[in-house]
Image (cartoon, rainbow, N blue to C red; front, side, top):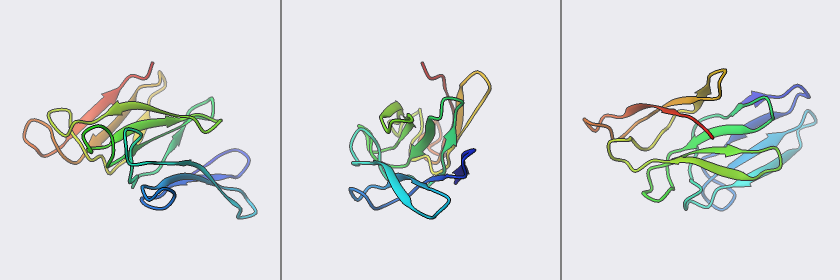
Length: 131
């Protein structure tokens, strides 16, 4: 989970919502708001990792399912709740099923690991340069 300057907590679930998990916010009084419900399709599904913020208040994370190949996605959720899929894993040489989240460098590049795929089938370390 990650906390903003107002004390709100943000996180993800592996299930719930449409059955494929949600991104949520809990305010300091304990009130939960679902910010996005994954469908398990191209938008991803089954997020096990946390999310991170950028300076504009967008959240970034991964799902270990969904996407065109069912191998997960890297996503961005802007402050208005609009999801953008930044990358769809194929489960092949590019990796798949990322169970960990991402970290972000000062120029906006995202880094993470995927549990499956890769040249030996044992996973990958990836970098994504969001546009």
